[in-house]
Image 1 (cartoon, rainbow, N blue to C red):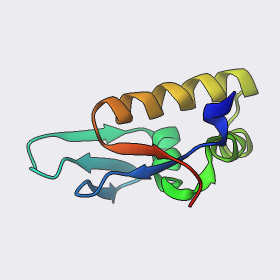
Image 2 (cartoon, rainbow, N blue to C red):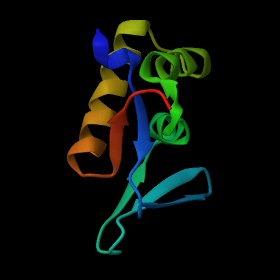
Image 3 (tube, rainbow, N blue to C red):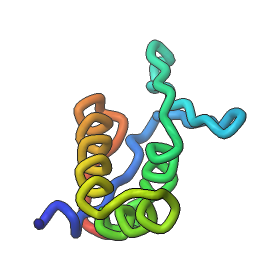
Length: 94
């Protein structure tokens, strides 16, 4: 799948904070705050434009007790949600 070779980057203006092992994302205007779970936190930490999505899935498989199909589906669902909320962009590898 072509999307798996793409990378993700947090949108400019999005502020993230890790508090007591939970990550919070705040929109640039400060009007919305989103709390994300441990898998979401791992994905967000990889949103630097250097790691392809397939590499993020590999990291999920190493860190969490899940199978590849589930890891891929959950990762893509999370990325699509953040993309739809304009919290991240999908790019070519930088």
